[in-house]
Length: 391
Image 1 (tube, one colour):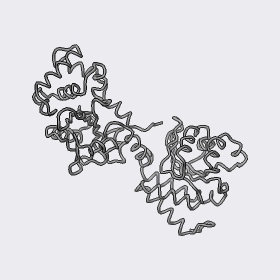
Image 2 (cartoon, rainbow, N blue to C red; image 1 turned 90 degrees about the vertical axis):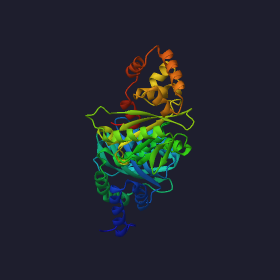
Image 3 (cartoon, rainbow, N blue to C red; image 1 turned 180 degrees about the vertical axis):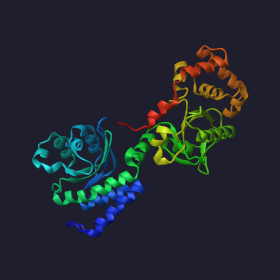
Image 4 (tube, one colour; image 1 turned 60 degrees about the vertical axis):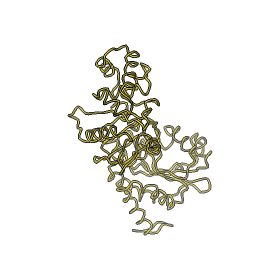
């Protein structure tokens, strides 16, 4: 392999090897993108995922940019020269903004997006296209360096087919390897604790809210890397539900389930909603985590998760009343509900009488029937909160 001016054959061989390592380990992309940027004397770079239909521009593994620049680029990407070039380019075609320097410098995109943040040129190529979504690898220069020349264009043309193959190898048809980081950002933005578990119950991922719930330790802990409620009855119920979820399939009636997770005092706690994710779209979305079950852990008082959220808000139920209602909805009797929730049976009856009064019902059967008719399905709402925008 012949080297380019300023780039040795060994450097080219090393970076191409690093690109293919990324196919099996996407976490290597940040370091590899920096290596590519160094070879072409660039100050920034990374991988972008452009959604041409929904006009989104998600930056992954990027470095060397001010957050304000990334926000400006995202808001004006649809009108940028980059978006226009991507529409007509083939996968692997190398472009730079300064192909026509005068045209670039006179453009509104340069004045509004590049110049305020000291950027002069961006070089990139589309590496993957599926539907209306495109992934691109790029590098950029600050105003301390000249526009990209033929040497840098040649380097990117040499690397382009290898990057394209690496993304294809890593099952990037769904951009799963790239979506894992976007999904983590989405999950960390949720107020609910999200725990993804493998078939054996081990937690393979938890979001920021989940980490806080475990650290607090009032209702839920990790024991041997498994979700472990403080209350023994809740511990058994959660373990049974996770086991059932791993055995669920599309032909069974098991699609979601809720378990009350009281705290040690019995005055508070969480509602855990479990969803099997080994089938269908959920499996595709969560593939990077190798998870089988998603467990959503939410305090009902703080914007509770479905099921029960709309019902509780409609009828003005308190968090304690909602926990009792959800325990009863699992088929538990008053004594069993009291034991699971860590409260007395008279307290359960008191909550139930208040629920009757608020909902205009007089019998438990009528109350549960009303709950069933009033509660929207969990599946669509939870999945919508998990799924990055799709074309």
